[in-house]
Image (cartoon, rainbow, N blue to C red; front, side):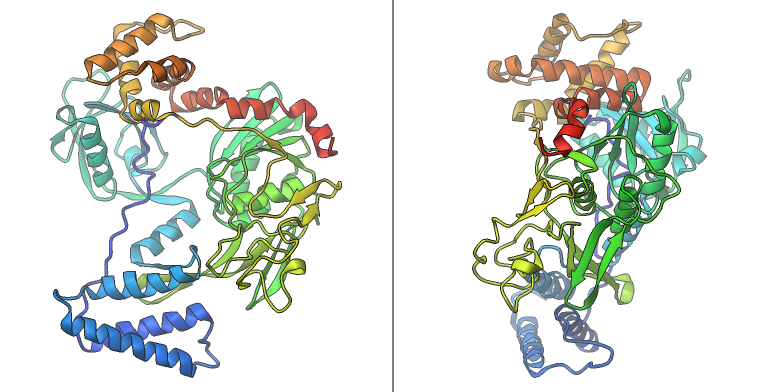
Length: 547
């Protein structure tokens, strides 16, 4: 539900905090830092052998000479931070693979916050429409909670700017600018007419990694994991226990749009469902000892059938969890092929609060395959190859050139003997196509028109009938409202978008009347891809046997 924003959950805009450096000692220091980063990234520097090899020394001197010439002769004064950090360091790292990165102070702090499951903000989830901002949900213990804000409060001004005077995009921009710095909000509490000025200062706010959990049907639980953080295994267990885990008959585990996180957390979640001692993953790298990770015995364990839903935005740690459940025949994987990121990133803290993320190795699934998709032209050309089929003398992380014969046809197997093929990512056992909004519907949804309609409907209707359904008359009313606001309604889109319009309008109305969680539950249960995945439960045992 796009217009219901969570503006204080969004990662902050990353701004360079380093002050411009001047010529002389500061520039030499920066160039030396660049050379050091080059050595670290290429494995040429160590505590025991800090000497720079001749070829690397020659390249460092060449870099220094080129930079000196640019600094002396370029048409405008050179921004040293931009040239060195954004150009030199980031350019060098991007030439290795897409995952190596130099993290400036803000980026490094944001990464650490994400690992803790926290973000800087006020702890509010807002309903936003043209000229109106309502508070839908408050995080306990957050700045908003301590200031006395509550669901139903209306924000009428932000730092002196009146909400009613702003168009939708200007309002969104104002909220985004305000989330990371002290702000004064003009707030009208329900039943009052005069706004109260409330001053808020942003702080770290704990965010749930299991952001949706409810009973899909009697005995069938649904969980969506948004990311893997230190607290995720506990959140999964607590959510299942709240849904009476001993009596559950199945779990629909949704990993769609999960961009990963802490691999140890994903391993612990896998251990809630696997047998103790089963292999979850293997980690290998040129400078690291091979590590085979087994599922430990957990305080809680769940044996019910699982259907795991994935898509192209299921990434990294989420893919490793899906692969472990698939290869031990513990879950049916449904949906679309996953992203294909299976590299180990080592993050090293540098001076001035900066960091360096470099690719140190790869993760392999229980059957021995890598989920990393090949990236031709990078050091990950043969990333998805098992060590047994990489050309002699080459490793999966550095084998250049033509793909070895038979590599793409290599086949691995689950514990029960079902084939799982190589190629990057996790291929679902059952393919289910997802829904993508057409451009017209995406436009009216993102601009808040359906949210505005829902608000006006509630204003003019004293109650919603139960069970509530969107009528043809309501759709015509929506169409007229769009036309009055200068929005074209092409027949080819209007006719085929009727079903999704009904669902989205109902979701918007439910969120405003019954709360955001109820609206999100309705939206998920109306998702055709999730519905088809839930329909697989009667066939789980058969699918896992390869029939």
